[in-house]
Amino acid sequence: MLNQLCVLYTLIAGVLFNNVLFFLVFKEFAFVEVVWMVYQFVAAFYNQNHIFVSRKIYL
Image (cartoon, rainbow, N blue to C red; front, side):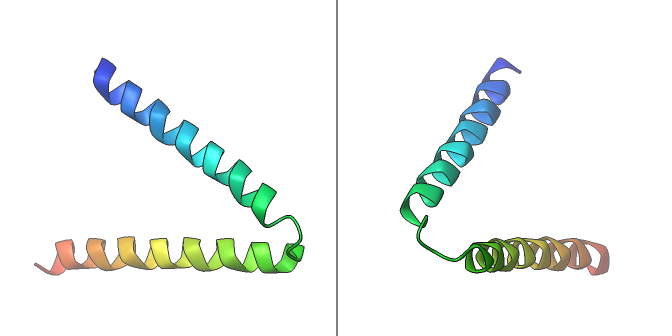
C-alpha cells in the first residue's frame, strides 16, 4: 500500500514538474496552440482507453 502511494505521488509530482517545464519552454507560444496541443493529447488518450475498453467487451 505504501509503495503504491509513493508511486502515485511520484507520478503526480512528475506530471506537475513537466507542466511547469512545458510552460517555461513554450511561454512564447500562443495560448490557442497550447490548448490545441493539450486537447490533441487528451483526445488520443481517450481514444486509446475507449479502444481498450471496447476490445475488453467484445473479446
